Amino acid sequence: MLAEYHQRFRYILVDEYQDTNVAQYLWLRLLAQSARDNQRNICCVGDDDQSIYGWRGAEVDNILRFERDFPGAKVIRLERNYRSTSHILAAASGLIRTNKGRLSKTLWTEAEGGEKVQVRGVWDGEAEARLVADEIEAWKRSGRRYREAAVLVRASFQMRAFEERFVLLQIPYTVVGGPRFFERAEIRDAHAYLRLVQSEDDDLAFERIVNTPRRGIGDTTVQKLLQVARANGVSASLAARGLVNTDELAARTRTALATFLRDLDRWRGMAASMRHPELAETILEESGYTDALRADKGPQSQGRLDNLKELVQSMAQFEDLSAYLEHVSLVLDLDRDGGGDTVQIMTLHSAKGLEFPLVFLPGWEEGVFPSQRSVDEKGEKGLEEERRLAYVGITRAREQARLSFAANRQVYGRWTSQLPSRFIDELPPAHVEASSDTGYYGGGPGMMEAKSRFDDAPAFGSGYTSPGWRRAQERAARSPAFVGGRASRAQAIEGEGRLIASSDPAAGSGAFSRGDRVFHQKFGYGQVTAVEGAKLTVAFETSGEKRVLDSFVERG
Image (cartoon, rainbow, N blue to C red; front, side, top):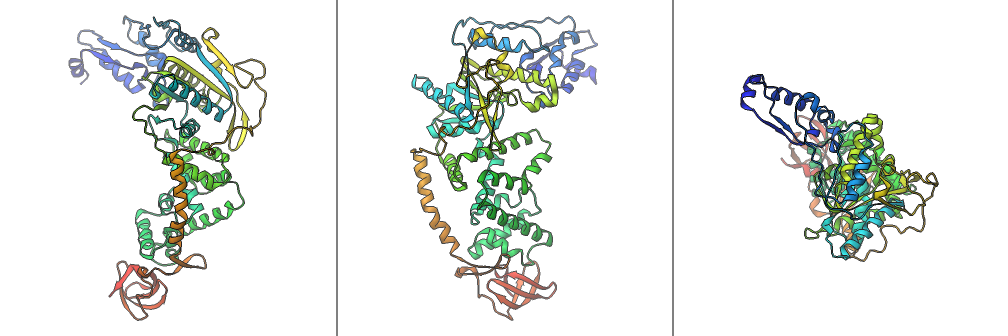
């Protein structure tokens, strides 16, 4: 069989060789070692300094040992760079030289001069977002395009601050390689919980999270709940409170649904005395949502947890839950279509192979970049891959590369001092221009100086005058009438939440009387023995006495 493949594939070309995994490497060695005429016609193209996919199984050692695996192979170093200026290349080359596991090469370009790599220290993450947005606006005023600028982050949770700032300033942007922060599934789930706690009438929120994480409440049950809600002119939550006290649902489903409803009631009680960030964190924990993500061993689960942490801490900027949810509605409502001329936001991994005249690299702090998780899991090997990722980020810039780090970050609502990334100290000073609002740069004096939160920093959510803000205000003005109009149709809740009546004539209340013969699709034929509003007690011929809603039966 191997000989057959040797006959078929006499010449092999491999691109991006530094990203091959172990299985691909072994296949290539077998295919290239032709026994027929001892030919090894294999050509591999790659850059060991751009091996950044170890988390996907890529093995940088494959390219590092190429000459040993294929002795006699000719190595051609492609060292001329046609993209970046000499300062950018020199800064990136100086950084990557710290790695021990690499093949030596020296990049050069004919584009001499240009701006040095800018390194800026700021007080906190929000100041960093303001800095980047201000510089993008200045770039635009100088006659350049938004699409020529890119913000490259180490992790997706960092996008939130930049997205909110861009929305505030009406800077059009596109998130490359994934949804915007507030459009991510885990963020929408968290918001659905909060909306349902705030308003029991939010059917979209109820439908989204009634079985998220899985509670044993399937799609059929959810559809039945919505059917009852429509028939009775009430919310899905109110319909659920009625159904848990009937035999319409299986016992296990009733138990799961009743537990969910009790949790909602408890969280609503907490909302009166607990700050909204702590409430959000409590809901995510007690609902089992974060536990489900921790149990998920997929490559995206940790990033989703990080996004939820960022969400919780960002809520502290707002006075209460209502103000925060109104802000989210505004962000989702604003039109950010720049007709193709948009700032690009993406992770460093997504940026490989791309180039931009102006590149921002925020969050260069220990624990963020390099990622603490990567270093903890892989040690020195993980640190070297993080450094290669930094090298890739800097070399995405054609004209200007601007790095930044924050002296403080808010974690779980508490401010912590941050240390600048070790990668900043590894940049060659001759090609870097550094400044800092915090009074320190790199390993200079004052690095450990602790700072507290800043009361004078402007909070997001204030000063909106955009069309989107006005639309949000108009929608908010209309919403009470809608909610009130809907709520007025539901008349009474008794005991632990039993739906017993409705003023909506279409709800069917009074349509059946004691002694009526009825048919139920699940329980068959029976006779009504008691009527309590929309709830019937029926003696079924084959199923015994059951409590059902009148919308589920028809005259027999």
